[in-house]
Image (cartoon, rainbow, N blue to C red; front, side, top):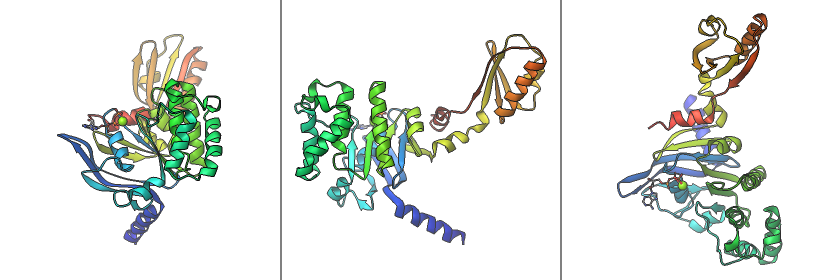
Length: 320
Ligand SMILES: Nc1ncnc2c1ncn2[C@@H]1O[C@H](COP(=O)(O)OP(=O)(O)OP(=O)(O)O)[C@@H](O)[C@H]1O
Ligand SMILES: [Mg+2]
C-alpha cells in the first residue's frame, strides 16, 4: 500500500516535471565541479539554485541547457533528452547566461530581432513583439542605439528581452541581477515574476539568499558540487525555528532572574546593553517582558523578534 503510494507519487512527479537532472557529474582536471546532482523541477515552479561562489551553479546550468556535456548523467527537458534531441529541447527554453550573450555592435532592437529569427519566431510578428519587449524593459527610447554604449543594467535587459522573444516554457537565469543597481534589479525581478505567474517555469541560480527567499517557491542549496538540501524557503527556515530569538533592552538594570531563570528562555546572551534571548515562543516571551517592564516601572529601549533567516539555513547546510 505504502509502496504503491510512493510509486504513484514518483509517477506524478515525473509527469509534472519539466526539468529533470539525473546523477549529473562534471569534473575539470582534478576538480569535481558537480558531483552526482539529481533534482526535478515541476511545471510552473520558480526554482532557486542557491550556493556560494564556486559551488557548481554555472556548471550545472550549462549542462541543463546543453552547453556542456556531463561526464555522466542525463538531463531531460520536458521529457526530452537534451543530448539526443538538443534542438527540440532548446526551443522550449530561454537562457540568460552568467556573462550575457548579446552583440555589442548591434542595436538593442537588432539583438532582439536576431534572437527571434534564431528561434524561428514568425517574421511578420517580430517587429511588433520586439517593440513590446523594448517598452516593457524601459528601453524603447534607446532601441536604435548600439548596445556597446549601454550601461551594464541596460545590457542585461537586452539580454533578457532577447532570451524571451519566443515565449519559452522554461527560463534559465544564471545570477541575472548580480552587479546591477536596485532599479534594474527590481525591474528584472518583476518581469521574471510576471512570466512565472503566466506559466513559465523559472530556474534561477543565485548566491543572494534574500533574492531566492523573495522569489522562489523551492530552493536547492548546492555546496561543493553536491546538493545539500531541497525545500521551500519557509521549510528551510522552520528547520531552524529553535534559533528564534528576542532582542531586548530596558533603560534600567533588572533582576537577572527575568532572563536567566525564565522557562520561556532556552539560552540568554548579553550583548552590550542588550540581551539576546533564544526561545521557542517569541510571542509569549515578548508579552511576558512587556508585562514585567510595566510592573517594574522600566522603559523598553528596544524589543525585537528575530526569526531565523534563510542565511542561517545556508550557513548550516554549507558548513565546510
Ligand atoms: N571550464 C572550467 N575549467 C576548469 N575549472 C572549471 C571550469 N568551469 C568551472 N570550473 C570549476 O568548477 C567549480 C565550480 O564552478 P562554477 O562556475 O560552476 O561555480 P558557481 O557556483 O557558478 O560559482 P559563482 O557563484 O562564482 O558563479 C569551480 O571550482 C571552478 O573553478
Ligand atoms: Mg556561476
